[in-house]
Structures are given as structure tokens and as C-alpha cells.
Image (cartoon, rainbow, N blue to C red; front, side, top):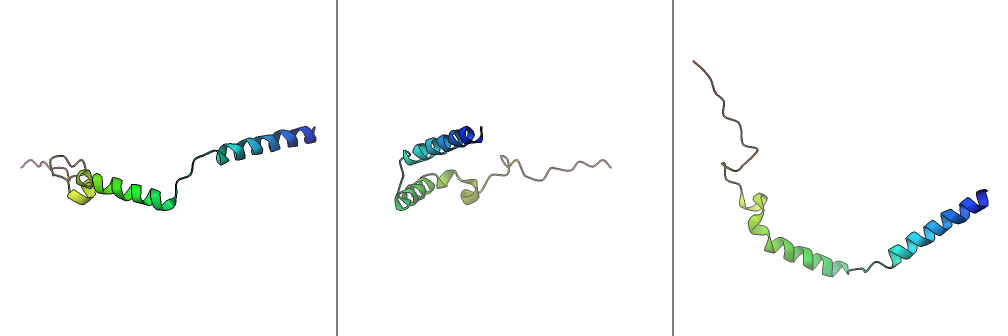
Length: 68
């Protein structure tokens, strides 16, 4: 029975390799240019670059109430 399980495993490997071979590839230079363009287009919305107002900042320090 190990021979038939070996054949099934090899068929799965071949199927996976065919799937991976059929994927369209993008050149690294094109992917880098696309990523750079995306970052430049969305830089105005990035709170790490533009900062965040204190009223909309969910991580602002909580106000402390003290009773005298």
C-alpha cells in the first residue's frame, strides 16, 4: 500500500508545481515601482508621516480625575 500512497503524494506534488508554474510573475523592478507609486499616492493619509490630531488619537494618555 506504500507504493500507491507514494504515487498519490507525487501526484499532489505535480499538481502543486503546475499551479505554481501557471502563476503570472511580475518583475521585481516593476513591483518596486508600483509600491513606490502607491506609497507616494497615499502618503497624505499615513498618520506616521503626517501626525495625528490629539482628538482622534486612540492611544492618547487618559485624563486622570482626582477628587480633593
